[in-house]
Image 1 (tube, rainbow, N blue to C red):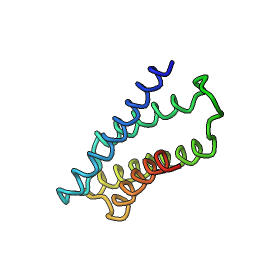
Image 2 (cartoon, rainbow, N blue to C red):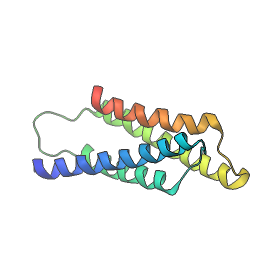
Image 3 (cartoon, rainbow, N blue to C red):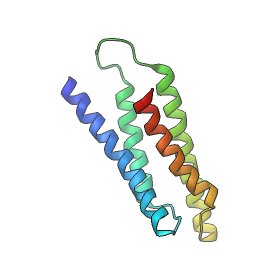
Length: 116
């Protein structure tokens, strides 16, 4: 069971890396665009994160407060990606504050996982 959980953790990290990596590429290029890869990374991280929140029969109780906070953050990231994608289609660009907030919240979610 521990090996399966480790595989799900790996998939969760791949989702985070996909989301954050594609955001970094856009930030470094100066384009500030929402890409499909960002959406895929968020979806992978979310599904794997929900799987990790399930009780795995390990010692101790899950930290439901941490799980809830991380879920709220990922929902906000998803909302920002959706809003940014819609504005990008309509006007051709994503507002700077919205774009930077996506990256900040993505790092915050990773920091919550590691430091909490």
